[in-house]
Amino acid sequence: MKLKNKFRFLLTLTIIFWVYPFGVTLAKDEGIEQLSGKPPFEEVFKKLDAQVRTALKEDRNKGIIELERVGRLLSKDYPNEFMPYAMLSAVAQMTPDSKKSLKILEELTALDVSDPKIARIVEKAKGQLKKMEALGKPLDMKFTALDGKEVDLSQMKGKVVLIDFWATWCGPCVREIPSVKKTYDELHKQGFEIIGISMDSDKKKLEDFLAKNDMPWPQFFDGKGWKTSLAVEHGISSIPAMWLVDKEGNLVDQNARSSLEEKVKKYLNL
Image 1: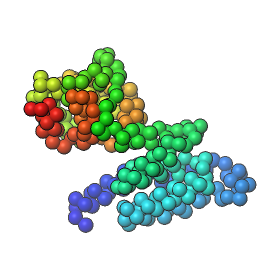
Image 2: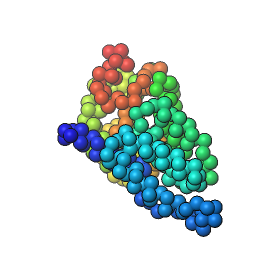
Image 3: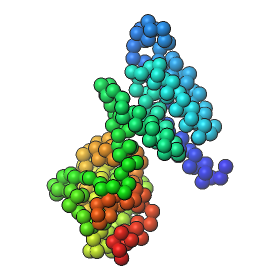
Image 4: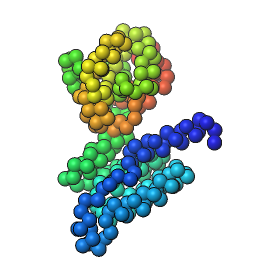
């Protein structure tokens, strides 16, 4: 396996393990499960968890298939446990099959949200669905920025707007800043704007970073890190994530990080 491919494989495994935390103790009430004739959830989960681990390490695609099989099996037999739905959420995120991803996300959004852990999975699924369906459509985003200014994307028509989901602790995000600033400095007067969605949790650190790096555009900050409300709402699961909105207010690119300057010029008609 070439080094580049090996790195990508290891990165994929890291993402899967982060989304689907193996080996967590999850049994709720073993007495109830035993009375119903079923073995305790934790006991069953550990056995199936090992099968999924092995499958994912051997072959990514086959591992995702096994992850879905186990997730569906456990969700049927133990519908009150959140882990089976976390498994299915991971499948929706990792599968290359967009139709399958859409189907799973729609199933997850229909779940009962009385359990807070399941509610978080439902919220994430709604964000992922919104992200999948957003391209080519008007994007709604309104908030009070870190500096107190009101930001309303609907009032920015006539501008090309970059929405940058990022964080000061994210190395790749920080490495993109010189390119983003260069594009901003060159094209701001022609109608290019930036909105930052910070996924930081330390307000002082963020403010110091913005001042030091001369980043004058508005920043959304709620201090929730990966649970930043606008990031969750729009299905952001990795950063940097750069979205581009055209002059009509439509989301036209969810991967604006690639060839940013050329794309901005295109939508500015330069």
